[in-house]
Length: 298
Image (cartoon, rainbow, N blue to C red; front, side, top):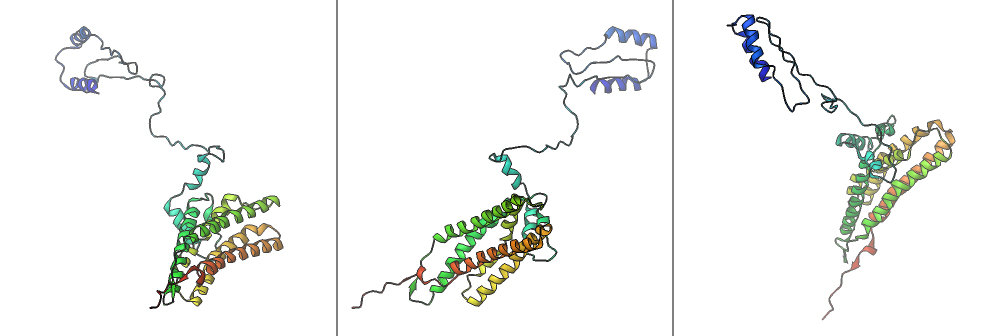
């Protein structure tokens, strides 16, 4: 660029020498040669009157190592990885906050036209279900202990914090969101069903279906039984109906009697899960408390 600019400035000036004299003077300097520069070469400098001098840089892909110029869109193809590798599970956590928030929102909307599986396609994930389950475990165990504390108020009993509720809640929740989807997918595969339902779809569906139970588990610490039963019904109306509507639409190509039986069984299991939370974690439990030790009378 520096050489070309100087040559252009020379061409813009009024020529002092004639063509012959200028040509002889130019030849005295000789043609410039670039040493140790394999990627560029100088072309001929043609001088004819007041015409512009030309500077040519020649290069080839072999000289520059076949480096592509410009920003090309390179999208890696699908990677065939084994199921025991980290890359296999990494694709199911490749979601953003907007996708997770949308799936959480639709999981709490029991609309007849809401096919929740469409919200999971084409990229069902395990990131959202994992955090839904973890949050539900801690919210249920903490709220259950708070309910026991409220039950002990005003009574001649001593409140004892039950740390075992965390492990029990974790066992129940993770067993429910893994065993039931595995049995459902395995049974449909055994029947050679035409439904487009994979194991990852059912795992993601069941995980997100529990998102409506998180606020309900917090409100269940209210020490009024009729409010707790209303919350249990509301929890099933939100999470259970979304789950059953989706399963019913998935089994649309199956025989109607078979679809009704599967949907009814899954509905009973889902209601049993909510009922278990109510009866174990939020029921008046006198065995979790011990009588306060009274000092001996003197």
